Length: 89
Image (cartoon, rainbow, N blue to C red):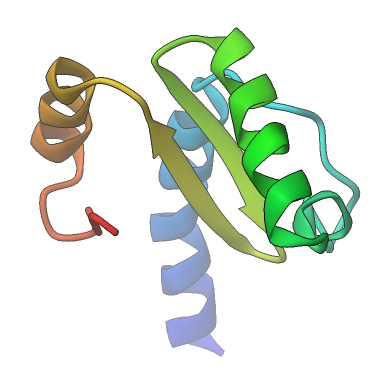
């Protein structure tokens, strides 16, 4: 149980940091999973709507956060904050 508590205590500051990034509200547990479970064309339009939040937006798919970056300079900032977790696709 101690390792579970330790993992939770490490995760809380990360959640707080991720929640500082603007993004759409999600449902508890599911996050934005129902929003992004659409056809590819609809998904593209949805991601374009997320650009209204700025150069960096955040969505949750289940318990996992995804950071959407639309500008190279913003990607550098995200990489500086979390260099080991940045995934460019």
